[in-house]
Image (cartoon, rainbow, N blue to C red):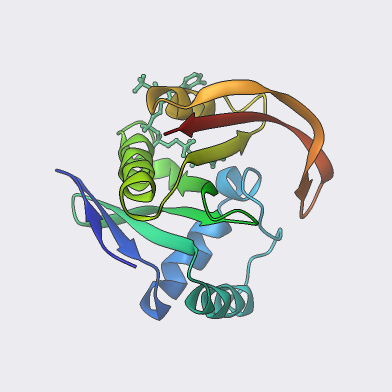
Length: 168
Ligand SMILES: CC(C)(COP(=O)(O)OP(=O)(O)OC[C@H]1O[C@@H](n2cnc3c(N)ncnc32)[C@H](O)[C@@H]1OP(=O)(O)O)[C@@H](O)C(=O)NCCC(=O)NCCS
């Protein structure tokens, strides 16, 4: 996995040294309620996730740095078809509204199309997550519609989501 950079945002591949910050971010209520993580995300969860990631050739996780400070996480992976990717992102609420998520998403989107053979990059978002919808639309993702009981949430069963995608 490689470092991706723009002017103020740097994406650093996840490694063991990020454990404390990753676990801290995953347990912030505003983040935990939106990303598919256990209600209490532990160091054991982190170790399992890192091990799985290190074995995979088609999964990516980066810590997002903005002006040299860690502010969040972005991930993406292909599933059954290596040309189709899906991912998510989260930012420390203390750093919301400064463009970190949008800049990171553009860096990842371009990397997947340029270097990973992606033909479709998609994301699912809950209908009431207006900030994330704005991020996706700013980054060129198009709304493809509401999928009812589509997404298996760890804590809330099958939830409704809107499918967004950008295609090559
Ligand atoms: C979604 C999230 C990652 C956005 O991070 P961020 O770094 O603040 O995003 P950006 O600064 O790049 O862009 C935010 C945009 O949403 C807009 N916005 C903020 N609140 C909004 C609201 N209630 N309704 C509509 N737009 C809103 C901002 O104005 C900005 O758009 P602009 O640049 O046109 O002004 C962050 O809120 C987060 O971590 N939320 C919890 C986890 C989450 O929801 N992850 C996504 C799961 S699909």
